[in-house]
Image (cartoon, rainbow, N blue to C red; front, side):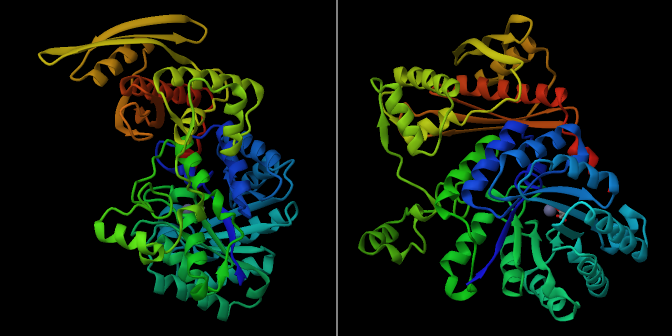
Length: 515
Ligand code: KIV
Ligand code: ZN
């Protein structure tokens, strides 16, 4: 079996999803889980973009011991220096330097001729070689680059000593036949190509990212790049879990495998979804809630007779377990800690105390607490600094014939308590109007979604919101047995992210406007 190296870019390309702003603690938490999953390389961010991004990449670099940590850089010395700084303390540092090569990018974005692009990339790799032994070079928009110029750029990167050359389909334009042919052509024509690993990096604009990546593997790609849950700019990136399971399930056809611990996939997917605030669609391959559900009578009958009639892989392979009834009102701290350990969470004393208090609170309202409830409780946001706003109390009135009203009290860090009352065209609207007044924040609600964490009337409700303020979009999440309280918590979570962003702007999305 050929080994396919996994380059995870959830923390860089994935974080470019609209509204996603991971802070340093959240990046480190995800990085630890990616380590458990067994990715070979993880791209932690774009250090030149902002001091915040540099600090976050550095925190990941210092925390991760069992994977290569990668920093992204444009083909400029100052960017490469920022990656050097950010990767100080990394066990296995790696630079990822890129430059666009397609005619469209050369003409409109770079305003450069072919030879200038070649020279700029060459001098960036030469400069980087002084400081990094592991360099990946990416030809941005390689998919729409002329075949001969693409091969010339790859040959240059090989000569200059890059160890991985990446061929991104940046805009998700290609189909599997075309993308696979590019790898075949490079393998057959570029002198010295056997000295480097070729990497596939696909975007999902036409829904072909997974198929294109698999075509690249069939045609000689050694590394694939992607994100957990397929998150990323626009329609997202290749979903790593889809590639891993395609190779596992059809090893007979692909003859290739990843080194991933497949049983960690469900947990990783869940963590990324919680911390990015991006819910996983129910029908998402491998990690969606319905990915292993069988609804029709004929399917259920087949499953009861023989699972392989309708199941090509088992939910257990990716770490899905039946949500068990685990704890109740009388369960103690010890049982609580043991159950979290079983779910893969080791909490420090202070975190454990906080989580236990929340658990006791929940146990007063909900008789039976399952694994899923516990996960929903503890996978709360991890702020880098004390939060600006917290919910003190909430009350509301609703009658079918009158406008709903809400009264909300919040604590504003450093200032104390503020209360406001407001009405609205629905109870959630009145709560949000009251929070706007109490906080003084001017925001637009872009999206609101609600789902139940478990079955039953006393299920925990989970609310996701997206808020916009000026150019910034953020997501927030709230969990409670009461959906209106969950709605308020999600809104306040998003306001805290806005406040955090103002304090420590990630600035990355803006910085990328300059090549
Ligand atoms: O999609 C792309 O081209 C990228 C590069 C920076 C590798 O993300
Ligand atoms: Zn990309």
